[in-house]
Image (cartoon, rainbow, N blue to C red; front, side, top):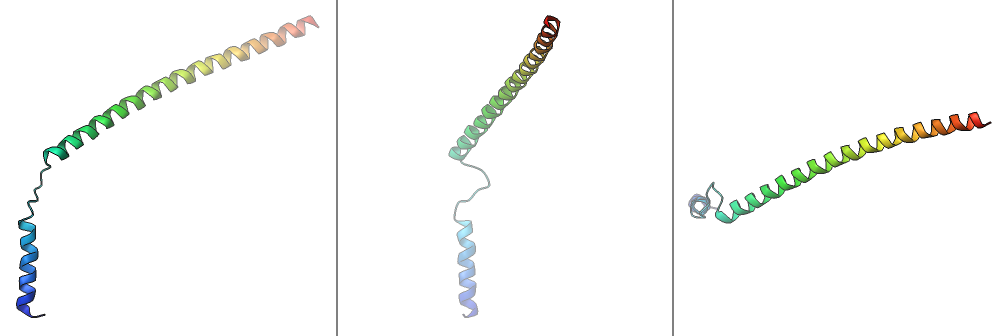
Amino acid sequence: MSKTIKMVVLAMFLASFLFTGCTRYANEEELKMLNDQNAAVKKAETKLADVKKERRNLETKLADKQNELKAAEEEKAAVESRLK
Protein backbone atom coordinates (compact mmCIF):
# COMPACT_ATOMS: atom_id res chain seq x y z
CA MET A 1 0.00 0.00 0.00
CA SER A 2 1.16 3.41 -0.68
CA LYS A 3 1.70 5.90 2.05
CA THR A 4 -1.26 8.06 1.05
CA ILE A 5 -3.68 5.13 1.09
CA LYS A 6 -2.51 4.22 4.60
CA MET A 7 -3.00 7.81 5.71
CA VAL A 8 -6.52 7.91 4.23
CA VAL A 9 -7.46 4.62 5.93
CA LEU A 10 -6.07 5.86 9.23
CA ALA A 11 -7.93 9.16 8.89
CA MET A 12 -11.20 7.33 8.15
CA PHE A 13 -10.65 5.06 11.11
CA LEU A 14 -10.06 7.98 13.45
CA ALA A 15 -12.99 9.92 12.00
CA SER A 16 -15.30 6.99 12.67
CA PHE A 17 -14.58 7.38 16.39
CA LEU A 18 -15.37 11.09 16.28
CA PHE A 19 -18.70 10.71 14.51
CA THR A 20 -20.13 7.68 16.28
CA GLY A 21 -21.70 9.79 19.00
CA CYS A 22 -20.08 7.92 21.86
CA THR A 23 -20.22 9.69 25.16
CA ARG A 24 -18.87 8.79 28.51
CA TYR A 25 -22.34 9.14 30.01
CA ALA A 26 -25.14 6.59 29.97
CA ASN A 27 -28.42 7.33 28.25
CA GLU A 28 -31.80 7.32 30.01
CA GLU A 29 -32.56 3.70 29.17
CA GLU A 30 -29.20 2.52 30.52
CA LEU A 31 -29.68 4.58 33.68
CA LYS A 32 -33.14 3.08 34.20
CA MET A 33 -31.75 -0.43 33.75
CA LEU A 34 -28.95 0.32 36.19
CA ASN A 35 -31.39 1.70 38.77
CA ASP A 36 -33.63 -1.35 38.35
CA GLN A 37 -30.67 -3.66 38.84
CA ASN A 38 -29.55 -1.74 41.91
CA ALA A 39 -33.05 -2.00 43.38
CA ALA A 40 -33.09 -5.73 42.68
CA VAL A 41 -29.70 -6.15 44.36
CA LYS A 42 -30.85 -4.25 47.45
CA LYS A 43 -34.03 -6.32 47.62
CA ALA A 44 -32.05 -9.54 47.31
CA GLU A 45 -29.59 -8.43 50.00
CA THR A 46 -32.48 -7.60 52.34
CA LYS A 47 -34.09 -10.98 51.70
CA LEU A 48 -30.74 -12.71 52.30
CA ALA A 49 -30.34 -10.91 55.63
CA ASP A 50 -33.88 -11.94 56.63
CA VAL A 51 -33.25 -15.56 55.69
CA LYS A 52 -29.96 -15.60 57.61
CA LYS A 53 -31.71 -14.15 60.68
CA GLU A 54 -34.48 -16.76 60.42
CA ARG A 55 -31.86 -19.51 60.08
CA ARG A 56 -30.08 -18.34 63.23
CA ASN A 57 -33.40 -18.33 65.08
CA LEU A 58 -34.21 -21.84 63.89
CA GLU A 59 -30.75 -23.11 64.80
CA THR A 60 -31.18 -21.67 68.30
CA LYS A 61 -34.58 -23.35 68.65
CA LEU A 62 -33.10 -26.64 67.43
CA ALA A 63 -30.30 -26.45 70.01
CA ASP A 64 -32.86 -25.74 72.75
CA LYS A 65 -35.01 -28.69 71.69
CA GLN A 66 -31.96 -30.97 71.55
CA ASN A 67 -31.05 -29.92 75.09
CA GLU A 68 -34.63 -30.62 76.22
CA LEU A 69 -34.50 -34.03 74.56
CA LYS A 70 -31.21 -34.87 76.25
CA ALA A 71 -32.59 -33.82 79.64
CA ALA A 72 -35.75 -35.89 79.07
CA GLU A 73 -33.69 -38.94 78.08
CA GLU A 74 -31.54 -38.56 81.21
CA GLU A 75 -34.67 -38.27 83.35
CA LYS A 76 -36.16 -41.33 81.66
CA ALA A 77 -32.98 -43.30 82.32
CA ALA A 78 -33.03 -42.22 85.98
CA VAL A 79 -36.69 -43.26 86.39
CA GLU A 80 -36.04 -46.63 84.73
CA SER A 81 -33.05 -47.27 86.99
CA ARG A 82 -35.18 -46.51 90.08
CA LEU A 83 -37.91 -48.88 88.91
CA LYS A 84 -35.53 -51.83 88.73
